[in-house]
Image (cartoon, rainbow over the protein chains, first blue to last red):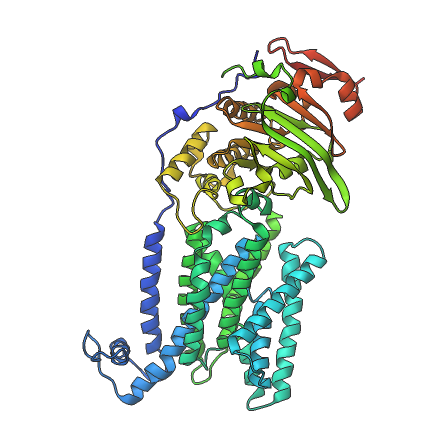
Length: 362
Length: 273
C-alpha cells in the first residue's frame, strides 16, 4: 500500500538538456560597455564649459600630468592657462561627480535589497541629510574631526533615527520608512541651515543651498581623493555582496535558512552604506535620487540579480552624475545650478512612479 | 515509487532516528509557544506536524532549521546537534521551504533555485558548472525545467511551491522541512507536490512538513506529530495516532476514521451533521 496518486512525478532522469541563462546581453558585455562609456564621458565632460577645450587637449593634459609628453599618444599640447582649467578645475570636478554618482547608486542598491524596500535611497531615508549636518558642523564650527568621519557619524545617526522611528511606528513598511526618513531629513536639514546661518560667513544662502541640494562646484583633488578612496575601500567590497543580497529576496527567514547571519549582515551592510554616503556627501552635499533611480533603471534592463545590478549601478551612477553635473554648470552659464535640482527633476517623477507601482503590489 | 509505509507500521520513536529533537522550548513575548517538544523521525521517512492554528507548527519547524533560536533543547541529526553548527554548515544539511505571499522578486525561476546554492558557494565566488547542474537537476526533479527562464513572479501558486521545493533541493539537504506546502493550492497541485516530497524521501531525504489537511497528512506521511498549544499531544505512525478520539480532543470536531479502500491508510470523514 502506498499514498502515491495518479499524478505524474517527474524524476531527475527525464531532465532536459541543461540551459544557460538566455537573458539577453551577458553581464561582462554590460560592464565593459558601461566602463568605456564612463571613460568617454569623463573626457568629453571636461571639454564642456565656457572655455572651449578639445578632447585631444584633455588627453594631452592627462598625459602631461602623468609624466608623459602631452603629444605622445595622440594628445595635444595646451597652454598653462588651459591646462589649469582642465587639470585644476574641470578634471577633479568630473572625477568627483563620477565617484559620488557611483557611491550613491551603490548605496541605494544595497539599501533597497537589504531592506526589501524599493523606495530606499540614502537621500529619502535621511542619510544624506545627516551626513550634511555632520560635514557642516565640522567645517563651520571647527570641530576637530576629519570631514568624512563626521559625515559618516551624521549618516549613521540619521539611519538609526529613521529606522528607529519607522520601527517604533510599526513594521518597517516602505512607505512608513520613507515618511520617517522625511521627518529625519527635514530636521537635520533645518539644523544644517541653522548652523550655516548662525556662523554667517560669506554667502550664507548659496552655502545652505549647496549642502541641502548638493553641489560639486568646490570639488578639487582632495574631494577626488575622498570620493575615490571611499569607493575603493567601501564600494568595491560592497559590490561583491551580490550573492548575500540575493539571499534576502524571500525575506529574512529564507535568508537565515540559507545560512546568512541576517542581523549581523544587515548591520554591516547598512553601516557600509552610511560610510559610503557620508564620504560622498562630505564632498558634494546631499544630492538626491541618484541612489533611487539608477538601481531601478539598471534592473529594468539587466534583471534583478544583485551581483549584476551592483557593478552596473555603480557605473551607470557615475555616468549619470557626470552628465547631470555638466548640465548643472553649463545650462545656465555663467550661473550655476545646484546639481541636486537637476537630479530631483529627473528623480522625483521616477519616485512617483515607484510609489504608484508599490501601491499596486501591496 | 517504492512502498514507504512498511517501516512505519512500527512506532517511529522506537526506530533508530535520523532526527531526534528533544525538549525544544521557545518563548514569544514571554509566553511559551513551544513547550518541551520532542520530535523523532526515522531516516528517509516523511513526518507530518499537525495541529490547530496557533499550535506552534511553523515555530517548531523554524526551531529545527535554526531560523528561530530555541530557548532550550537539542536537535540531533545523524549524531550531531544541528543547533551547535555554524549557520552556513547547518544550511548544507537542513533546507526549509516556506509559503511566500509576495510576488515581486523580479527573478527568473533558475535564479530562485540557484539561491539554494548559497551555503555551498563561497561568499565572493560565483556559481560553477556543478552548481548549474544541481539547479537543473532540482528543477527537473520537480518537473519545472520548462519554466527555468520564466519570471518567478508570473507563476501560479502550485508552480511557485514547486520552485521553492527545487530551491530547497538545490541546497542538497539531508533534512527537508516544509512549512504548510499545500496552502492555497488546488487539489491536483497539493497531491502532485506531496508526491514530489515522497519521491525525495524514497531517495533517502528525511522530510518534515507542517500540514493543515488531516487527510493529506494521513495519505502521505509515515508518522505524525500532533501539536496543541505548543506541546506534543501524540506522536507515532499515522494509523495509530489519527483516531477519532484524538481528532475530537485536539480539534474539537467529531470525525470517523475510515480505511482508504485502495491504500489502506486512514481516511477522515468529518461529522458535519
